Amino acid sequence: SVDGVLNRKISNTHIPRWNLLLFQFQIFIVYFYAGLRKFNSDWVEGHSVQSVGNHWVFIPLRLLLTTQQISQYILHYGGLTFDLIEGYLLFFNKTRPIGIALGLYFHICNSQIFTIGIFPYAMLATLPIFCSPDWPKKSIMILSSRWRQYFSLDAPLKYSASNCYYHPCNQSITLDDNDKQTADHTMEKNEIVSTNNKGIQQFSLKNRLTVAMLSIYVSLQLFLPYSHFITQGFNSWNERGVYGYSWDMMVNTWSYPKIKIKVIDLANGSQYNIRPKTFIGGPGHSLPRWSTYPSMIKQYGDCIAKQMKNFHGVKQPAVYFDIWKSMNGRLRQRLVDPSVDIATAPWSPWRKTPWLLPLLVNLTMWRSKIPELRKRYAVDDRSRILQCYADFPGYRLENLVPAGLNANLTVLAGEINVNVSNYIYKLKAKMTIKLPSNTSHTITILSQIPAIYFYRVENATQIQILAQDKQNIPEKVNVSKIKSAIIEFCEGIKSITGNIIKFFQGKGKIYYTIALNTADAIQNILESENITSSILPSPNQD
Image (cartoon, rainbow, N blue to C red):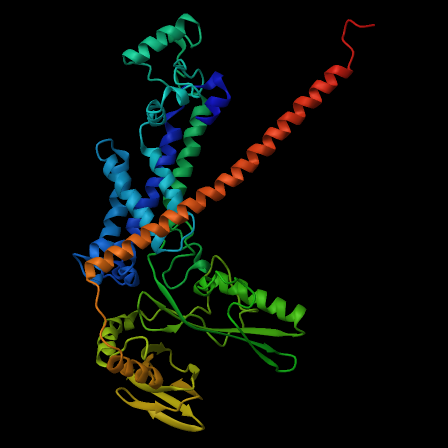
């Protein structure tokens, strides 16, 4: 260890077993609880991470499986199984190589598929924690003698006189031949404690307090992932907070179709429309994660009110959010009440947020009908787009059909009013209306139950261009699927290698600069000591 190299007196000294077990326990619950969190209908049915099955890391699998099969069996079933068994695989000696291999593949893939920061790299760094404690020494022994000389491999075996408890029935610790020779050698030099005083022989008050503190810590770690019934103010549709001690990262996939922020000055009635990223983020913040959790929404509302009041002359700002979201492929619906002033709205970490609208769980069955609608209307997400919405009774939605687009509005369930150019149309289920281009319209829910409707938007210009391309562009020679897959896979490997090289180059420059500065500082200290010793008179000098 590093402290053993810096302080040779404690080198090769026993440490309590619980030190290592505590780290192993902490990593174990990350895996196991992540597996438990995946026992929900969205994950088991394959709706949580549908869009990543076509990622380049799965190119070898796409030679045998379809994208849908990769999403269902590899991502969902495989991810659930991996999280449940990975901790056990790492803990036992016989299964540890399998666990390490699976962990390497899993975390490297996660680092390429998801934007989750340092988490996959941190989990990679924890894999050696489960290995035998002497694995660093065995790794160093592989090196040549030129490099082994910098490590204290022949340090004598020492027993802890105060930190470790040895079973009283085992007064003599069993050692292998090499360790016996080392122990005999060190005992001749009186560098270890006598066998009659090997560590703690019985629990003291300090040991009992340590056990009590460890028990509290372990219990807390087991409880916190299920403590969201206490901190209800942080809960969103998934009834869990912002990843806080939940270990449910990437269990839910969110889409952000529509976010509208409106500020009204209550003093004079002036109205301002604010872009969602006006006061936060930057070019790298493409996903407004704040719009998912009520605690962050409240913070951002307070921030907007403060900014508008201090820097934009709004005397009494009222902030209104109209946030539409879709969780795990469901219909798009509102997350918060658009009629509530977020700046003055109540929020507490201990109570359920009153202005958070509930997830329309009873409409989840419509999720399976979206693929049928896309197939019926030949939706390709380029020239034809399908947008499905669900809204609460009495709520209104103002929308605009951009110029150059043709849009039809169809009601699937419930009853709505559509106000277009001061004309009001009443629509029931299975009724369709064509909306004029470059014109705003307002939809009001009339039914006593949530209404479901969808837009079918077509880009006429894009459709003509695609049709002309099919007629005028000669057929190109298609590269075989296997060859194209190999090319894409190689490009991905090249990208990973380049990122790793850049990472180590950057870190190398940093540590090189630190080493130079440290060497200069040590040299200055030594020079100052030499100067001081040369100036001061010797004790024997008169």
